[in-house]
Image 1 (cartoon, rainbow, N blue to C red):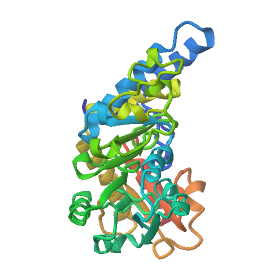
Image 2 (image 1 turned 135 degrees about the vertical axis):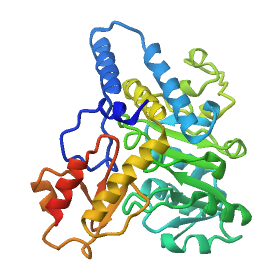
Image 3 (image 1 turned 45 degrees about the vertical axis):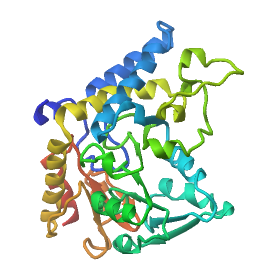
Amino acid sequence: MDLREARRLFDPEPGWLNTASYGLPPRPAWTALQEALDDWRHGRTSWEPWAEATERARASFARLVGASPGDIAVSSAVSQQVGLVAAALPAGARVLVPEMEFTSNLFPYYVQRERGVIVETVPLADLLDRIDDRVDVVALSVVQSATGEVTDLATVAARARGAGARVVVDATQAVGWHKIDVAHVDALVCAAYKWLCAPRGTSFCYLAQDLREQITPHAAGWYAGADVHASYYGPEMKLASDARRFDLSPAWHCWVGAAPALELIEQVGVAAIGEYDVGLANGFRAGLGLPPGDSAIVSLGADVIPHDADQRPAEAGIRAAARAGSLRASFHLYTTEADVDAAVEALS
């Protein structure tokens, strides 16, 4: 699908520069969700068609990250999925994490410290140099939530594997505009309600086969069964042989909205979306006298904008976010050049 055609499928109010907090739904996703909610209201259908949307979304996400559907587990939140990986670490395992990492990819390791898991946080700029044979897991976001910094995942993976460490990645702020290949990681988690424009309550987890053989599916239920329809009642338990054994029972209507949204991202193509998003971000940076960057997220600290300018965007109808003491603006498919111009004017 042509990018211009796709952009016409969104209905944003002018000034939304906050996709890093949540993305806006394309019209096909919104319509599918409203129809499902109406069916639920009147009891017109069983739940199976809603569950089929979960499988469509799983397959679409797998294609976006270069995986197979059987390598992808579904859940509602990133921290639930990281927690399974963290709980499988042995006592004495050492985890290296950037110090400004979003806590969904940090706290699950911290809570394992009582078992002897060691968590070390370092500045992102020092991460690569701190990977050595004492490290068992390198956990990081491909794109940092607070700053928008983009990590060269292939370089980190090469260093980690050379040291015998696993790589666990949060790709929530990346998938949808930044190309990701799971060949570089052992585990990848991604909440879909940001750059994938899906409802909140949808999350994916890629697990390499050798890693998932070491993980216990602590929250296994009927949806983790080899045959979900034969897994309603006990006592016999036969879980799926692939990553589906880590599935949590899906919040149906969230996935009804997720499937069309992910499929649209696929149809447009991550490369085209990334070029558009980063182009807008660099237009914003240029308007403020900043050099170009490589991210769809721009973080502005007090050294860039006046101390009294933090309220100006809101007064001008620009919706951005305050993160880690900075103003964070993020740009996606539905952002316009007029949005960029308005934000620059508000901050100049």
